[in-house]
Image (cartoon, rainbow, N blue to C red):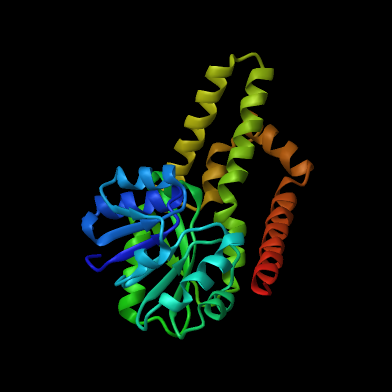
Length: 272
């Protein structure tokens, strides 16, 4: 990560990536970020890197360009960069839903592109990101993309771009599903007589503990659940209510709908 890396966009995810890279030893002098918003640039400058409000200036001499803008802004950004792009530069897009062929078309150049689907826990260094590369990405560039994204969590490469729609449904949108369950548990705790602070603490620490157990154990989640579920006990009674309400089927359907919407967004953005 000693080559120049330019970030186009200096929002929360970009700052998390830069912060992670710096913690992993990337020199601040190798990183530059461009953003039209003064406050965003100020936040990045506080990390010790160079900032600018001129995108073309940021990518001049950069080996890697990280596109960290909102999906609806990506077309204008890439088209604005097209004349300044050079052979051998790598584009890394973290804009959800925008397919590689659209970025490639807007760039008007045979450029290597890695499309990524990170999730919001990356803001705390515990994210998971799926990556897909087009045919112009070299092994060295793929390794560089890995080094950037592993700075904020774990990564996985997918073998086809369509798989990113499933990734979006599982991990991209996934944190919201767990937050939804936490909301319900906190409300239930209050309804059962706990004060709000206690109910929140018990819920969040239980969620954290369960995640640690699932991550650090070789036992499948289904078996971990069975281990907690004593015959005739409280957990079995609760699970029976969830099963009677077809909770598992609803979760599967919810993820299918999320995947379907991801496909729809890719078509919308890709035809712009």
